[in-house]
Length: 213
Image 1 (tube, helix red, strand yellow):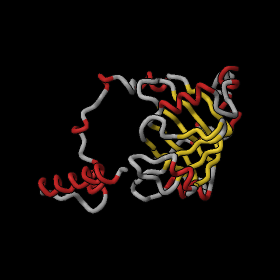
Image 2 (cartoon, rainbow, N blue to C red; image 1 turned 135 degrees about the vertical axis):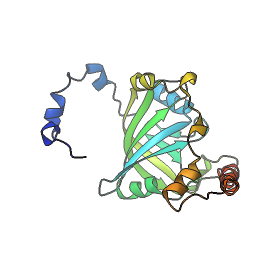
Image 3 (cartoon, rainbow, N blue to C red; image 1 turned 180 degrees about the horizontal axis):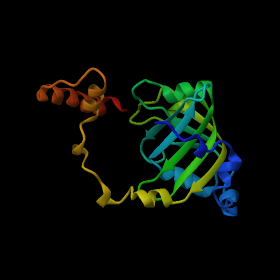
Image 4 (cartoon, rainbow, N blue to C red; image 1 turned 60 degrees about the horizontal axis):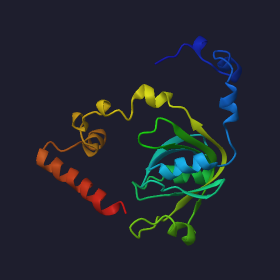
C-alpha cells in the first residue's frame, strides 16, 4: 500500500499539534521507583509483555506468564524476571544483550488498569537469584534483571473498549485451526490426514504437560 506523503506525521511538534496538552496528572504520575501500589500490582500479576529492540532498532514484544507474583521485586528500582522454557528463538534475550532498553506491561486478570515500567535490563545466571525463581524445584537457566527508570499506572480505557475480561466476549478457540496447523500451513504444509494431524497436536499438548517446569 502506498501511503499519501502529505498526511504523514514526521516530527514531534506536528504530532502534538493534533492533541490537547498532556494532563498534569499524566505527567506527575510517572515515578522513578516502585511505590506500595506498584509493588502490590506486580505481586498480583501472572502475566506481562516485555518490549525490546536490537542494536539496529528491530523491535519485538514477548508475553511472559507464571503464577501470580512470578516477577520478584529485589528493591524499589530492581525487578527479577524468570526466563522459562520456550521455543529457543531467544528474541528477547538476544535483544537485551545488544540493546538493554526494555518496556514492561503488567496485567492482572479482572483489572482494567495496567502497570507500565521502563528500564534497562541485563541477563544473569547468578545461582542465588535463579533459586528465587524456582517452580516445582526447577530453576530457569537465565533471568532478566530490570533496573527501573520509569513506572506508572495506565488507565482502563483500552481494556474497557476491548472488553477483554468480559466473559460474553470470549471467542470459541475452535473457530480457528490449532497453533501447529497454522504454523505448518505457513511453512512445510500440514498433513491432510486428520489422524496424523491429531497425533502431532497431541505431541504439542504432551510437551506442554512435561516441559513447562
